[in-house]
Image 1 (cartoon, rainbow, N blue to C red):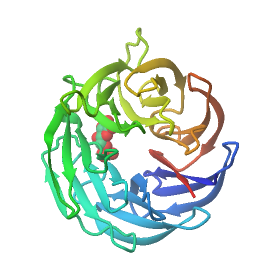
Image 2: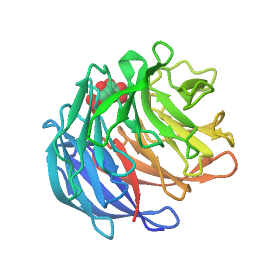
Image 3: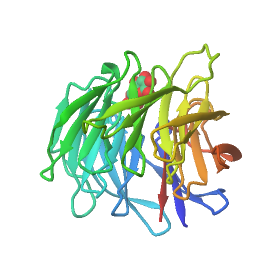
Image 4: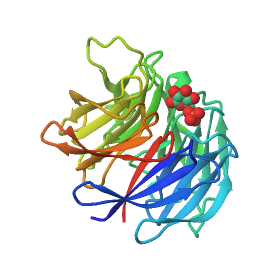
Length: 331
Ligand SMILES: O=C1O[C@H](COP(=O)(O)O)[C@@H](O)[C@H](O)[C@H]1O
């Protein structure tokens, strides 16, 4: 499998493009200078485009992905707030943007040329909006509002509109701060990392009443941990067996194994990693994890191994300043 790794470094305004070799080693292919601080990134699932969110002029830049993974700019569109997180639906028809500082989520249609258009709708009042995550059904959008301890649910319409889902929101425990989410491949469960109390919640997507319900909440930290909690990102291996979440104060990756049905997590261990890991990702083969240290200005590649999914450090690489986002794309 041919894969490339994109890392976004807002302080130096750069995207580094790496080829990922079969053994997990990275080879630098390109450094893209971006006009603005580049933060969130996502690849269109059906067309070869990388979308990034930049500031201080809030917009998305679309890059065409060449056959070798290198990038060339294809167009830009405005965004209604500072882009904290961007994502697409599973057919690559819409771009979603969550803005923490501007407390909103937006939806922008993606044109036939692969470039996003201007937003077709903006929903305000989502305090601490930290991400927008399309469900496996490609119809329900899950939007964590960190400062309100709730995840808002919206139906996505083909017209480019969002309307409140039948169950319009679910709430976490007070002070949790829901941030990023991933979905189990069996479409039955989602996992949300909570920034402020460093826990991971397991959300059953359709309980006996057809509703979303939290069925487990696990601490990411060891029982004797007394430091400040500051969790950030969460990712699942493609086979749904191993789940990872990172905490920035302790600079650790927490490793969970996932039960066969996806409904139960077991804490397997902690891996020290780059200083202040804000973003990481897992490759498409499920063999490698790449973590970015916002304060170390490096990324580190790990091999995922064994029944427990423990991590073995392979190599670290200097990137730009303040790396914060990692995307891995199968060519
Ligand atoms: O994780 C965090 O994210 C928010 C929003 O980040 P931004 O890059 O969109 O400004 C940040 O303000 C908060 O301090 C931090 O913990």
